[in-house]
Length: 453
View: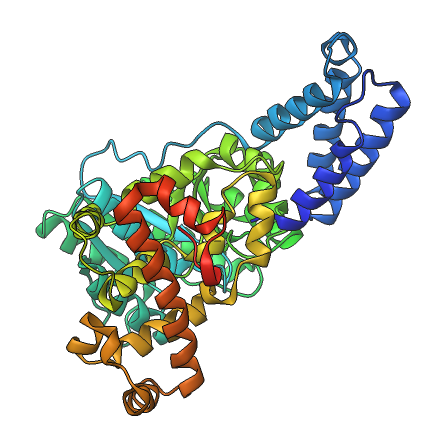
């Protein structure tokens, strides 16, 4: 997330770190680099000016000049101002209202509104135990309605269907009535998007808003949209009086401009970050954590929360007990580990939250950890018989050919997985004997075959 911005800002502050004292020239040069980094990240020019001015006032003051570690203090100033620019923690949706609470999602086409509607519904139903009803008023793109209906079924929440020929306002009104009858806590309304802001779209979304008296009007914006995001945010805020913002596609090579600009332009809090395509990939927005990641300091707290939320503790405990009893690590165990990794967004998504050099290692992560490769390996394991998964020693040449055919891959792919599995099996065997210390002694500090812990 924000890779390019992180790289440029890290370069700007690197020259200051470790200096015994800073001069006005040192600071001016660093600020020029910070300004260029923000402009390249598509941060709105007024926001850049305000940010640089605020940093400059503090950097030229006694706070830095009298410090024994002025470079570190300068980084702290950047961090504080980044947090201030992105606003206070939103804390998620405010649902303190008479149910059903109506949440209206608006934004440009392609921002990810439909997927975000499903992600938000899943988050509210699972983490806050709310009964959620989804509906779509995007009558111009029937595929969006079908997509949302399928997503609703996938995550187990309600969906209000659309009758052919219905107008958006009628759909929204009926959905609200259905939410009242069904005693739903939240109604999420997905509205139509356009490629550009236009009067007709704004009038339509305003009419839908009036019809359902939305409690929350959220602007869904692509993190990579740059200046378009800023202009659209301003227009939607004027039309709807937004209550919050959701940034999508923050897991991509986002320039970061939207995250740093939208809050200042609209004055509304960023509530959530979309960090992947899966319905689980929606996080509360914490400006202090995002600022830490932008400056290359990682976000270990979010990583811990994600692991606690997504890792199946019962399965992890079962595997640990199995290893302690000396029972072998088999392909069923490996598949479960891969599925857990995939559920958390893959190794890159995890390492992106680690500090400095650890995060940089994500770019060099072995091919085995790439999402596509993990799915290929799971396909190979799924093509094995139950006996082969339990007893890998059964797999000979003819079985490898059958497994390769069944997974649609080559025998060499099966051989590669077998080799990696045998190395992993040895690690687990050593773990069962000597715990982590014994395992690390065996490895000499390295994991075999590209596998991580």
